[in-house]
Image (cartoon, rainbow, N blue to C red; front, side, top):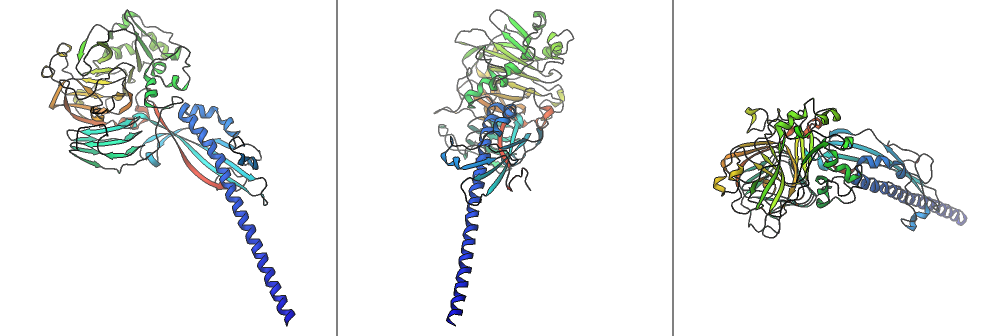
Length: 558
């Protein structure tokens, strides 16, 4: 009996030891697998980080150019000594490499995630890594697949966009009809009824209150969101190079800083100077109109033709800047006629009617004066639309981009053409503007109802202690007394991109303007990529579209 009981006990003990050993092996294998998954993910994330940097600094062109270098990337001992004990492969039998595959060509689609509801161009790249710990007893291999989505969102997809902080206030009822995004904090400061009809996003906090430097006192209004606001969200930046600060982004409206800057570099390719069909160079002594970089600036328009739409002989006073403005006046209607003229050499060189012009102001003016560009007679644009860009302040006088008189004062843009205004600052002068009255007190500068239909990309003076910026409600500047009966009708997209460099006086001075009734709307034409203004920049964001663990030697998710 004793022997029998001893045998049973030994059998039980052996079974328990075998179970314990098996369980220990399973636990060890599970631990090895968990470590291998983490290692494989580290390999995919290393590529994700590099790809995101390349995309945000140089666009998808730079990503495609670097695909082979991504495939050669794995975690190494130079990253950490920990990785010396790991082996990585591309799940296709190639040790020391990573699987990186470009997906379908970019397609225009409705976006999901943080920017749901917007549309943009999206490309997906698949990254797969298999990882094995070299001295692990069970030789476990784990695979990780990561889908990386590179998205380009046309910047004029927003009713309001700011590359940094944004402030929105209102002294009268104000309805924002399109998406709103701030790449910093968003201060919502209603002093009347403020309504957001579409999505509102911010990289920083969305604050119901004033900027800490704004000393105007307590809020006096209410805010209504028809779509719940979202923050924080990933930043949306322009691919201009190593830094994307608002100050650095200002370079897109400047001429090249050096003769040695490559037009194909990240910042060079983003400059309007290099992208426009027509380059207008104005000096103290002459005006030269030539073709853009597309043919090496090699075609020059005759002086007779240039004189049809350019004039440099006028001046007027700007009460906000306290300076006399010497504008380069461009008669847009005459420019539209010239753009289709069979004798236009630049049109012949481009193979179509020009639809973008960069104004390079090389004049030297006294400190009490300010150079600028002014657009007049702008109801009819060239047939393909028009983008006007300059590093100067830009003034728009009278109705702009509304050839159908019956649609003036309305939010109907079916007769409008793609258009954008890009400058240091944008000032609206009504159809009643008179240069002769510009220096007179405000009571002599009475506005009349005016309509402007164009996207705006420009600068602004941010809030400083005791000086409110004016907010997005005053992003287009005014110099007249509008009064409640004289609306300013605006259909477009407002992009606050950088600090103003030339038009730098603060908002809120006396004798500058009385605000109009703001009949503003986001132009839904911009939801159609074929109706975006010429040379519309795209904001870029990188996101993970898929993540999955894989069996070894697999490159697609089950």
